[in-house]
Length: 209
Image (cartoon, rainbow, N blue to C red):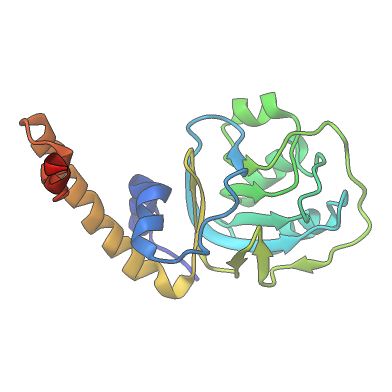
């Protein structure tokens, strides 16, 4: 699944919180413990899922040769925190056109990732390296912290978290997200003109309580 530049920019602009509310999909949000390596990181792109054995990053090296340019790697490790990813893989990813990384395991070389402004979202940071012995799944559907992910789903990640929108729901979610953002913009304009959130959200019954 490919997305236009306009769609990806719209997704990043709308952000994960707006799109999550607009999607109506309770399972689309990844574990809130998955956080950006550096503040302000923001990405949107098609998912390329893979699974690593605990403490083993061979699947990542294989994915580097298979993932289409513009992909975001979504890596499940079963929550085992180690340094699956560092500066060397970051340089490889930049060369391969990988747009970003989401991993429930761990990364290292934080200073280098931050300096290079590579968008990485991770459960933790670990100096502990990994072996290269097995590749349970590369490019096949996975469950990422309880969120289903298939190749081509739309991944949006920012300071609020990581969202995975199934490909079949992307167009509807973007439209609903834009409508929600436009409504909130009108609400914030009204707030600057003196109206209250109780009035704008039809919560005035609380004034009589």
